[in-house]
Length: 132
Image 1: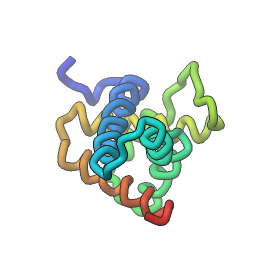
Image 2: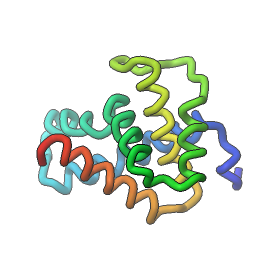
Image 3: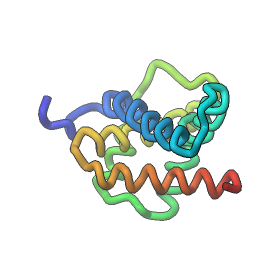
Image 4: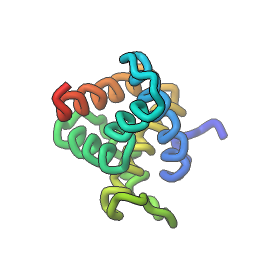
């Protein structure tokens, strides 16, 4: 498939989940964390459904998404998944799925600079929230 904009929200989220996690892992290792337990604990501040839903709501409140980006977020959020997060309610899970769909959309459409801009924004927002 060449036109990735035609993918459904769950397929975009599938890719976005992996891409976002790689960026977060790279960031955490670059900060000097090396112990797997530390890395996992810190990663949850960024990649859990709760964290992703928080970040998505912050992005929407700040108005930093383009119309296209908001559209792909909604596509992921509105997708009907037959699974749910272990530690999140359905609303939080759907918002997080939308977040991941947005990341997948940006990655697959080769919008690398924008992807990294949003991920950097998320990393800073989590750091601000956690007092870093």
